[in-house]
Image (cartoon, rainbow, N blue to C red; front, side, top):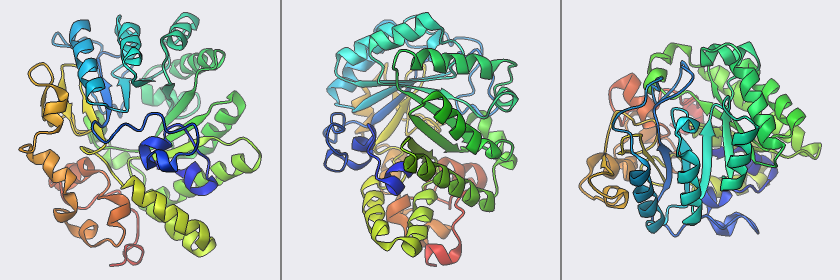
Length: 392
């Protein structure tokens, strides 16, 4: 994740302790940094979903997997994660609110001292569910919107999905729950970016995440629908302009881009020309963040207990938590993919291998390289930096 708001406006947000450590997170924001043991964990606790989003990395369906971890298995997993001192757990799906025990599991995790967040399409959050979300102690609710109105409904393959999600957002905000909007950028909806900022301003939403398209799950068939490199640059510019505008008008939001660490380098190079002093600070923050952290500071567990380097690696399992503890799987030195991801700078090829800013990016999203080139260590095809910019 690239925190545009932190880099441009020095706005400190709750997640900064995870990205930069407590020493750079600011007062009151260092409570969930962990001690260097476990990663942030995305638990895709069900593959069942009420929608059929065209870009779903989990390839969610309307059917529950018979092998889905049950409540007892889920609690055993959570105990291990707490013992491993993971700093946060994100309950995702599919649609996690379709699990009847989701609030029991979330409350159990919160009781173990974990920071618990919810990732949902928002359409099922009525007033009663919003109250339960509040009471159980979710730190944040991430709601996916890929545009306003019919622009969102097209992605969700469901008429009325936007209207239902907006009501879910309002039900959460009415109770003071921190809400994060999440938009996946494609060539069909990138013009929606300013409208999403407008919605955040109008509704009082605290956090915006703009995801670059990952070629994974159903998103694997959407490569032709990704934005061009020139479009990616202009979209990042648009995100930056809107972030600064809100900050200047006293309405600071946490704004992040996800899935392409070229964004951080691009922003640094722009600041190097416009504000060299700020550029030096940004360089320090980006180095501390370390670029893509798949298999390092972020991991994933799916609905049946398979462990993955992150949520976009559903096609590759590192092991299963019903047979070995997550902590044991994560620390296994014999796992070749994990070992490679943690030492990837020696393995990267093409433009990535010769980039002057590899310390800031760490090769970005490896699943995109695999999808396009058939090689995990090939260059990320979504890197939009020029040869001059990478210092070749």
